[in-house]
Length: 126
Image 1 (cartoon, rainbow, N blue to C red):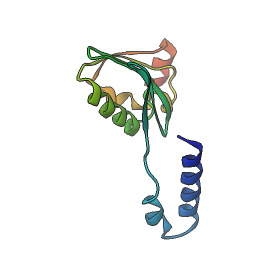
Image 2 (cartoon, rainbow, N blue to C red):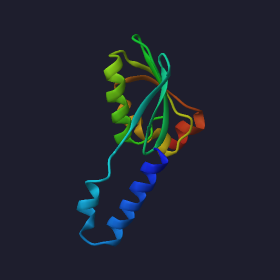
Image 3 (spheres, rainbow, N blue to C red):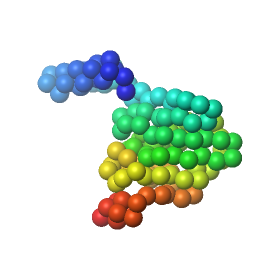
């Protein structure tokens, strides 16, 4: 999220919480806003509310590093599908925090393998 967008959303969100009835109006100004950015050929990042997801997409397969939250992961899956119908060979979780692995559910039936440190898997199951 860009700094200007962050300040705008934070200010509008604060206004909505402090002023009764303003939430409906303010929600019209807040946008989900995500960005799919390519760095080189088929490597890039996806950014949204949960942070940054790295990806590698080819016509034959895809690899994704982290998954943010379920809603954001769905947006990423939609963007990947615009580029390829190939499966996601690997979904790699760097660690178990929800903003890194909460979106794993969006990859169910899409990712062939989820890779994480053993402790990350244990923490996700607890």
